[in-house]
Amino acid sequence: MKTGNNELQKPDDATLILRRMLNAPPELAFKAWTTAEHIQQWMRPEPGMIIPLAIMDLRVGGKFRIQMQKPDGEFFTAVGEFREVRAPERLVYTWDWEKDGSGSEFGEVEGKPSLITVEFLKRGERTEFVMTHTRFATPASRDNHAMGWSRAVESFANLAEHQ
Picture (cartoon, rainbow, N blue to C red):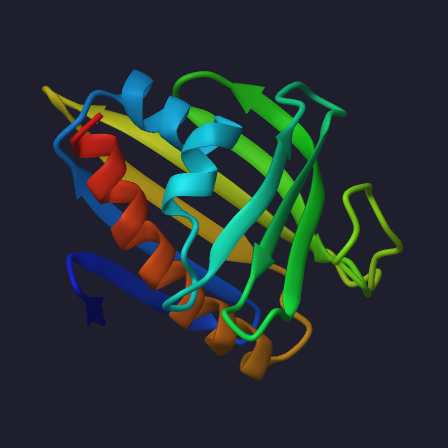
């Protein structure tokens, strides 16, 4: 299934795979995916969303927090912990949501973490980006994330290719 330039696969009810060829080397793509300032520019799972705050402690055991705000003021704040950090080729981390993500500090989480693996595979002067998001609680959750990730990866690719 194609969404823009992204290839989207749903191999089972709990897994989502997004692939994209990037006209950028893995080093630039990895930096764009993992740097707070860059995340604030490309993380747009819904039109009009802004990212007031992004925190990235990029090390095994380090935590991240990405606060997203819709135009109506509603917050969606993703948090997680890095399980594997192998720059510039691989990143594995948990992904969960805060119950009330409106604050500036880490808050109480829903406690239903999923797992994301991102690979930046060198293909000559380009990078094959592969994101595998697993452990969704329901197919509906997977499908909602598929829409948001497709938009965000489009924006991420644009930033990675033009930085």
